[in-house]
Length: 331
Image (cartoon, rainbow, N blue to C red; front, side, top):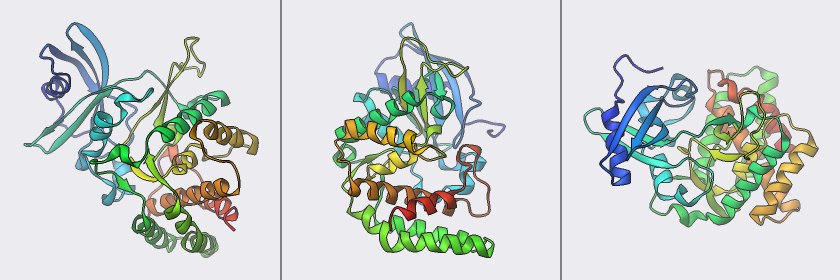
């Protein structure tokens, strides 16, 4: 997962925690690679702060440290190693659910940037089968969007979902499509035409808010979920992780990511209804078209990412099928 000589060490983690907390009595133990890392190297550790032991995850957010699957598909214009630490430090501190921030550290010698956050024990949302947990996640998302406008990230270098960004995704998808057999190429060309002529205008016109950017089920940890998929009686904690693509854009890009996959119409409607309860979004045709535009945007984005490479298992689905379903709701 990492090189033989890791740039991550306990002294750097301890320094990050001391700087963030303002406390000197900090000790770090058990710094070991974390097996569930996806896009960036992760390490599990125990940090003792004034005799209180706290489990943490240490994420190496250095661009050059990306794991192989992520470095193949994520374009360079998305990367900014300072973004995720700033989101945790400056934005998420007053939000119920996300992991607590315990500091970050930049090493000028190795150009390594580390982020230290609370290790929330639980399962990925995709491993939890109860629909009520998914609708609770949609409610959490609606409340988050309602309370965090674009102004919430003033001063943070987030991704801006504007016409230029959408045009980049379109160009990448066009390039990727040239590798496809003729029948699939024609399918992609049809949905890209809808994206170009209709969806981009809808996306640009949508009111901008703070968005996670990749709120797929694999990026939501359900605290309180047990290995067998059951839930502890004390209740659950909805903990979105991996905020490196946080941005300002249409709110429903997050709802679109949450509801991707082979859901029944009733199940997907339950999540959409739950989101509307807390977001203040008004149900109706405009809402449905904006959601479809965001679903199409995500499909186009993923088609463009997987140029010559298979998607990681947590994103393994037919994004062309997803694009066609979304495009059909735009016309």
